[in-house]
Length: 190
Image 1 (spheres, helix red, strand yellow):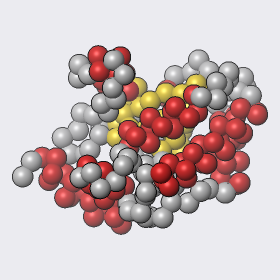
Image 2 (cartoon, one colour; image 1 turned 90 degrees about the horizontal axis):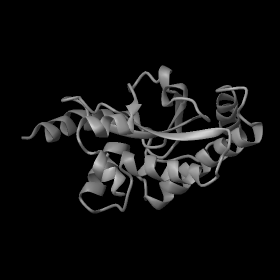
Image 3 (spheres, helix red, strand yellow; image 1 turned 180 degrees about the vertical axis):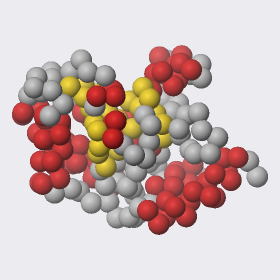
């Protein structure tokens, strides 16, 4: 048994127990709370942009859950994607699609980042996400937008207070492992 398969078998029950299999779209109060957190990133963040980003983050998460055909917790869905039974839905798919959607808005007071956690772990599977920050701020000063973690229901948290993952800039991780050339050529490998 490979280390990866052993990790999956050990972690799969946790994924099943921890996550709902039914994505939910998020309420107006959910979006308002996220908008408030985005506005609080910097006095320079435009209120309308923060509101729009929060609404889009929730709406796009739900739309992706439908497009990815999410019916299972994340690790089970990952197995189905890897077996070719589902179209998309690995964490990096969520991160890539969330980042692209929010970048398409051309916000002037907000920036998007990509982050990876557990890249060096021999125990845990690596995980990718999108992060939103104030324009010019670092990824560490941003907010994690993670639709994968709860199986198509948006999880968000300031990067520095996310208790589940220690996030690093995606490009830093890819450079460390010599994979940055693939990203520069347009292929996503995280």
